[in-house]
Length: 307
Image (cartoon, rainbow, N blue to C red):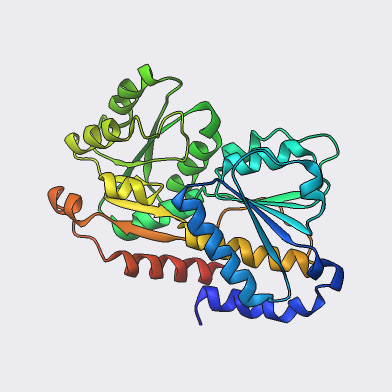
């Protein structure tokens, strides 16, 4: 039985507890308009929630600020992306909120209006232990890890260092507080060839810096583990991320449990994820990697065995 199938079985057992009042009030989804990633997540969320709880109504609101009154009429508010999360948090509604498709940094930076109700989140950040486990599995000959981090991602960099040390890997990190510090930081972190791990910190890893980072790492013969599918397409050898469809499915599962009366859990990393492989760059670096599907399945099985 797959991880998704097990989650669905657990959900099915508790959904009969959804009250009539909750079933009548909509689940309000706030998403960024005209963004294909967010639209994919909306479709995945709506389809999965209707599959597991057809008595629930889903209303979708795309783009723009939202008024508190609009949120107050919902049984649950689900935000997809940092812009939607910001708008919902500022509104100060007492309706419970589930945030998805945002980084932990973005979540922690939200300003919540007075009187705001409870909230939780499924953040995009992959656990450091999961990143290290993938590197041990995919690149067993590499014993050094490097990363660049901004002030907002200090905790993740420390967690990565701790997880790597537990596995006997050495780690070199560099703090980057501005664009001027990016290249010196790369030179410091990659003094010796290492696997460069990108973090969901837009101060360091963003669309303006991605090519510089990837090309410098390539010239230094250092493979990159990217935090998104876009990084893999751009030239990272490996990627570890949660897709928009997976984020929508996982958010729907948690939404259904919350509406069935489960207590609201603290914000957490995603349980669903996938591995990406750029075979072209891997060959250029002389690396032989297992297929992405094989690595994903093996990593999930490892985590399931630890639960």
